[in-house]
Length: 138
Image (cartoon, rainbow, N blue to C red; front, side, top):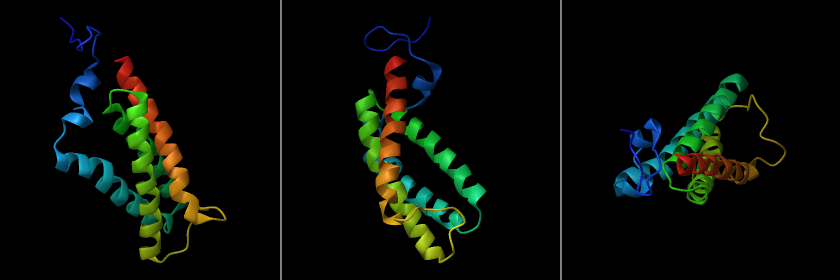
């Protein structure tokens, strides 16, 4: 017999594996929504000074992480809120990591790099919403 949610809808295997954000401990919430985006962003910022290809590959990983983070929520709107906040922190982490590394960027951050957290916040909002919508469907 297939697993079903509280409303009697079938639940996918991925949805069963991923613990909803609201059911995580406070420490897990802080780590998942705040610490991981900043630390991964800082890693991306360091790699930005080494190789453009590596930087962009990590951006793809970050996008997938945004969708998976959104998947921990019950709806697209919940995923979007989480994604927006985590995206801003991720972008700030990129700038911080790149500044600490003190290297020249191998990929362009545009003419106004200070706007990167806004851009990553919007992207995170979209990716998180996609994840939340996928969760709502399963």
